[in-house]
Image 1 (cartoon, rainbow, N blue to C red):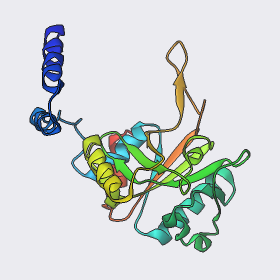
Image 2 (cartoon, rainbow, N blue to C red; image 1 turned 180 degrees about the vertical axis):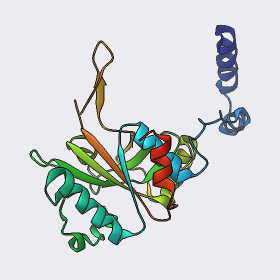
Image 3 (spheres, rainbow, N blue to C red; image 1 turned 30 degrees about the horizontal axis):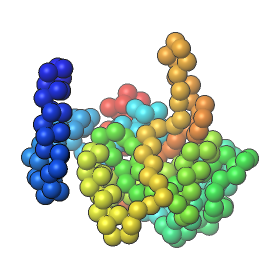
Image 4 (cartoon, helix red, strand yellow; image 1 turned 180 degrees about the horizontal axis):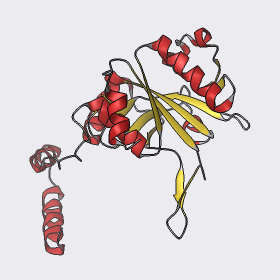
Length: 232
């Protein structure tokens, strides 16, 4: 965008907003429309989301129901950490999972020092960015998203949207019904930082690994297609 175009846009915004009623502002905002979202890596929404999670240095799994999900979580825990213990928020959806079927031993609450693995249930997920969205509060401590060394996230395929604009539409609809949460986290990969030479280091100030499990109505080919597109 050129300096003249930017100046013209800001001038119009100042002119419209100065003393204008709310209805005028809303009408002008709607007239501006929305910029097109980024192109998805493939037409299928589930495969596109999984692809972008992999591109964000996360790992992925797919399950069809809650029983499959707890088994996958148990296998992942034992394979990577030789344990069946984790910390989970007090989200009712997590409490209702049949953990005993897979021998998983969750402690419900906020992660504490020495507890390496935390589990969250995403409120939404965005295919465009490969990100998940959590609402934080007493039932979903922010510490579980940000402080555990390893973070596992469950995502219901019904809560998957194409782009960030659709995500905010859903967020606003939910807030109209249930009120504002304490916080909203958009998470798109494990914690990372770069040194002066631009080399990425993972886990510097948060989770070192990030594993996303997409559960529900997921096409059988979605996981294989995502790994192929991501070059894995």
